[in-house]
Length: 233
Ligand SMILES: O=c1[nH]cnc2c1ncn2[C@@H]1O[C@H](COP(=O)(O)OP(=O)(O)O)[C@@H](O)[C@H]1O
Image (cartoon, rainbow, N blue to C red; front, side, top):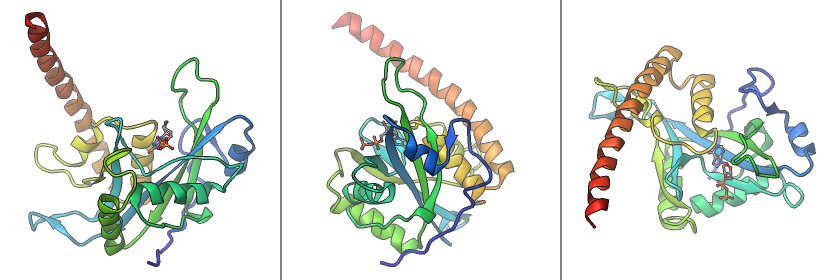
């Protein structure tokens, strides 16, 4: 397969506080490093023959029930960030996918997972544009030959970028639970690459907060159900 590369402006538009240059990140002694990539493609496909899908963005349902991007921990003393990411991708996606320095978008400190955690984690984020058939090939391999399928990765998912009447689509997707800063990596990428208009994204996020409140009520209702049963058995 030959993959097209999308050059991204990495010097401007700093994403969030805690952001580091690639060199600063690599100079951090005692830090752990994780690399993840957003694979995406343009598409002319339409949902129900009328709703343009426009772009395919791949994420995955992880073993812990959270949504995240493919990738994982790398060890810069033994491998480059990019070769470590490619190694992780071959386990999770079941194919060799070369990642280069040009695909790097940003590096930042992850929020500490617990107050007692000793070493800080730096997450490096990459974006790679492919064509639709290459994305399909990734999806096929991820569900058939990938070593992690059904174990560390429960399945690949596409991000719905459209908003339906009533708010279904992007708003519902964004109200799910994400690992680390994966949700902000997704939102920033959609804005930077102009995959969703800022106004639409704002509307979806506003709706997402409402969906989230509804989910809380829904969870409280089922919790009450189990409370009753817990006392009986
Ligand atoms: O999509 C992501 N975006 C940002 N950070 C992530 C993402 N996925 C995982 N992480 C962070 O990186 C750490 C290591 O990632 P992952 O769980 O993929 O590695 P592993 O499979 O090598 O154990 C996670 O504990 C989490 O804090």
